[in-house]
Structure formats: structure tokens, C-alpha cells
Length: 111
Length: 117
Image 1 (cartoon, one colour):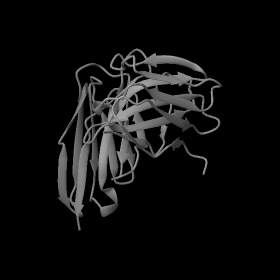
Image 2 (tube, rainbow over the protein chains, first blue to last red):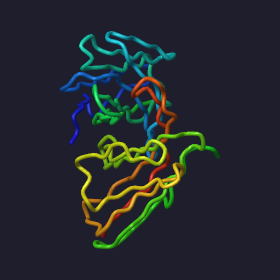
Image 3 (cartoon, rainbow over the protein chains, first blue to last red):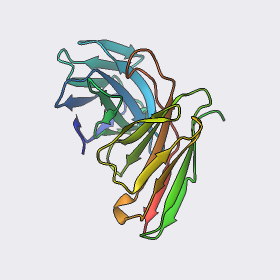
Image 4 (cartoon, rainbow over the protein chains, first blue to last red):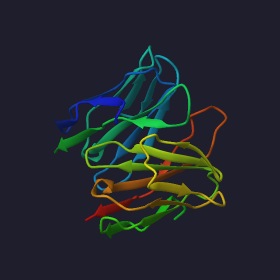
């Protein structure tokens, strides 16, 4: 079953509003990756966070890794219709190479 | 197209039948992962290979599931005696192993959608 939880499960925003999805793990993670999956598509890698407290930005997207390395967030500023999709976090535990994907947050942007 | 390819894209089978899926990774990638994804859920890890060696296998994977990567290139995933609960999207991803554990970027294929009637 899922060991990495994400909230919210669904989010509807007006175009131009901000959006945030939160990822929480019950165990400490070695690193965390974020993926975007468009409707009917496959997951596409966005970014990876490795260090405690790390913050990375990609244009309007800001990714953060918690100090305890058990949670992460993705924030999108001024959403656009092209941001529509499901955003997944995927965490790697301290041993092994198995990534645990979160439950995902489905983003709908209303024009 | 040099991305990850999967065949077939769709498979409909009757309960109890065996099915086999194929994944062709990006040519220089030495790691290959199999995942299963059901509607509204994230991909669930099944197994992964580095070259031809199967290094990890999910404890959730029943004995009916087997995967191979005989020459370290393409991989097959076989499900024996399919059950309705096996209906899902089966995703393959490939990556190039890095020196730091878990930092490889996975590139996903389009998936094979299995429907068990």
C-alpha cells in the first residue's frame, strides 16, 4: 500500500491562482522526486531533492524538502492551463532503490 | 523516437489466462523498473533490474508475476493465471545508474493497460 501520502487529493483553481501540494512520509527519506502526469499520459520527472531543507525553483514551480526529510511540497505560482495534471512525489528510503510514490494531487485549472 | 516503448499498449484477457508485456528502455540505460498503477493512485513499485540482474522485488508481488531482462536490454513482465484485481496500467521506466544511490532520473514509457474480464 501507499506509504507516502499527499494532500489534497484534488485541487481546482482559477487560472492565475497559486497551488500547493504536500507530501508526507511516515519514515525518513533519503531523497524525494517529483513527477507530473498529464491526463492519459505517463509520469514525467520534474525534479529531485536530496538535502534537508533544500529548496529548488523551476520558473513558477518551487519545491521544498523538509528539515526532517519526511515531507516535501510543490508550489506553483500563478497557475496556467498547461499546469493541469496529477503531481506525484516519490520518496526513496535509506536502503534499497525502491521509490514509494505518493497518492498524487490532481490539479484542475479553470480558465 | 528514442524514448521508452512498451507493447502492447492495451491488453484485454480473460481471467485465468497468462499475459506478457514487453518494455524497451532507452538504449544506453542500464536500469529498468516495472510499476503498476491503478486509477487514482500513484505508481506502485514491482521490481527493478540493473543490467540483467533483478535487484529488488516488491513483497507485494505474488508468485504469479515474473520479470526478466535476459540480455540487459528489453524486459518482459509475465502475469500467470490473471485475476480481475490485476487490471491496471503497467508502467516501465528506465534510467542510467548514478554513483549516488537513488539519484537516477526515471523515464517512463506509455504503459500497457491490462483489463482482466
